[in-house]
Length: 118
Image (cartoon, rainbow, N blue to C red; front, side, top):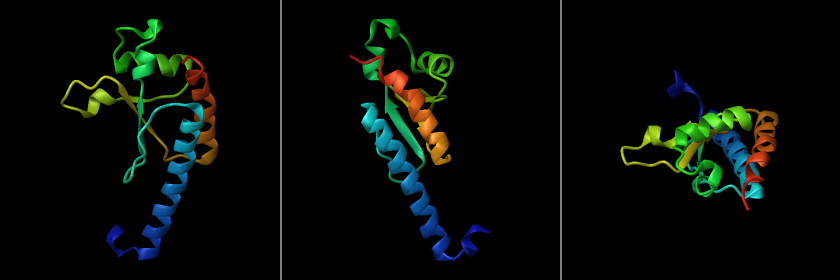
């Protein structure tokens, strides 16, 4: 049962996810991809507004964008609209609860996405 773990377990868990967050968010920042910086979760919300303004994505939903990303970029994301009651269509959710190698591979693939921006 989790409540019986020593406090050191939670400190180490926090440190691990902080490192993963900083690694992944740092990579997104270097790519110029807009995102939030989560404080208590291992999910990042990527703002795709700039992509949806491009002619090739005009009129697309976040769902269509996520489906395209899987096919063309090789990175899976969850449409942000899945998490909001309001009509939010410009956010997609990525997670960083993976190994550094996997996160780097995702960042390498996301570089192809970033190249689409002027």
